[in-house]
Amino acid sequence: MAPSGAPEAAMAAPPRQAKSRWIAVAWADLPGFGEDALDEAWAAWIRSCERPSTAFARLCPEVRELSLASEAEQREWMLRRLQPYRVEPHGGPGEGLLTGYFEPVMQASRVPLDGYQVPLYRAPAGLAARKPWFTRQEMDSLPEARDALRGLEIAWLADPIDALVLQIQGSGRLRMAEPDGSQRTVRLAYAATNDQPYASVGRWLIDQGLVRDASWPAIKAWAAQNPHRVNEMLWSNPRTVFFREEPLSELDAGIGPRGAQGVALTPGRSIAVDRDSIPYGTPVWMVSKGPAIALQRLVLAQDTGSAITGAVRADYFTGWGTQAGELAGRLKQPLQLWALWPK
Image (tube, rainbow, N blue to C red):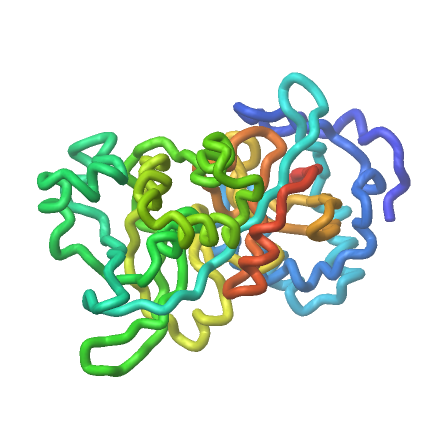
């Protein structure tokens, strides 16, 4: 590993970011860099090379070639070709925040049935002409909004809380019951929002003094005990998400949905960031230690989210299904980030 110390004085200035400043550091300043299983991250890096930024396009042939190399060779290449920069707010060092997100797996019906009465929608045709579009409450109650949504139902869920989880995560897998009695699994991918502000229903419940724990199990438990107030809780978040349906082949089932960069996400190796702090496709050294998990690893900035704002802020893609959801739901811990940029 390269010796610690100040970076070379002749090094080019780092790219300027609207919401962060990048401070050049030595590779030895990255905790745990010599211990990560880099080959696990390489698949995510190769996916970023499907839609590379200008800065990384020239390195992508080498990244692809190194997919079959040893970890030692991959690490040595990174030392030669990249410069690490500590990511900070413009005001100076500050503690960042890591949260998690996942791809839910839910049972659904293609048509409304007893027990399946909660619709998930495609994006309405007039979405761009009316910004912001109707709020969540208006979509449930205004005839004009309901008319605009009629016929756009992709599927129907049993639980409105599940629909909210799917919208907050931005994508999901549905085990779809078709009208002919067959079942198949499809993916719902993010298509658009109604351009309304996001508000946390968990925060609303806490502010109302209704719960102390704003985890999804606690929210579901409160909703089961207070069915007459569920709409009030849901309407506290005016934002909703529209989806598009995608087939889920055997190959696609082994990778995540496409993030904002336009490439498939890799469990444990993809993060959502504020693109005004870290550009899409940037390899990032991430360190986070807390009660949910300890992480010192290479990840790729491949996605974003409405709540992911600020210099040192990331959402960690944990995968799909129940275990991934449990980890994502527990993640809320300190974060450090280093952007790895071509020399």
